[in-house]
Image (cartoon, rainbow, N blue to C red; front, side):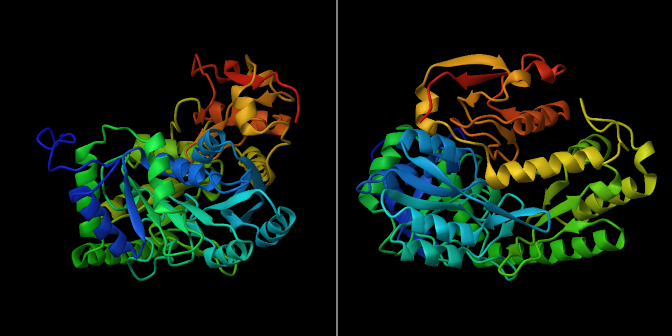
Length: 465
């Protein structure tokens, strides 16, 4: 690692103006993914999404972009820095899981915003691995004459094995950012931006200018090496064979869980597919909320899940898994089911007692779905709220105030409240419940984790639009 921690000396190229080995490596990556251009990122997918929205903001007259409510908080950063106002498309929920934008609502938004629309930004898939009909989104978007930009943080393996959903570019995206570190196996913080062969795709000139605006001038060469190595392996014959084996193992795990009486949540609607490597375990039949079950699995069975909410825990399998690791997961969940809620012990610091009725969790889940489907009333654009006069208040008394920062439970990092939105009593109650359950909320100052009710948020004192 230290031997390869180099810098832009002669012969090693420069990521900000590549013309040598980095440029050649990116050309090979673009060819492997069927893209026009590929750009290595060392500041995560967030940096790539900010660059994409900055490029979209360079379109003449650009003023706003359409985005589904179920998007990552990276789009808040991109909106503020690019000066673009978000127009939220309602999110669908399918089989209890977020499943992309409501296409009828998207169609109406595209018709209602004839001027000043910079782009449609979609999330494909959700963190749960639910992949909607991105081709239909692309068709609508291109008919309106605007680019489709995709947050593909969880799509890096799509299209690489049988049973995986289509890759974003193959489905019609004009540009996508892939979290290579989430699926391909590169070092944390390394991602890839891919531009398609499309008249709507941002130009190489714009993308390079925007990437230079937000990227470090001292990129990590170990990250660049890890990107090249991971892509070369995973997209090669051996890597694809390993991935296919992982898909087969995941199918076996689903069947073993079903036989053990464990419910794996599944999308059901037409045009909806799912990443077979992601298993959303329904915690309610087990007498737990998802966050309680995640705590029990970590503390009692040494099983770390990817994410949890009021309803489910998300488990991800991959090429590194085997019958042994899969068996440990199945055994732990079977033990949870057989022991019953009164005998499971600790469910995590600050979590309600195991075995508590799920009625309260169901209410919180419904409120969360409503928040992520529709959102809060917006008074200010995010940029104005961010740079406006602000004060600090207790979250417990923040209902009716204008948020100055995004408030996002993490994971998955989806904002329940955007800057410039009025915090409703429902939003405040949901965020407090997340903190009381041992969860984390970005944008909240929590001086004492044992007293989540005393957390602080920043509110905006500016006037309305």
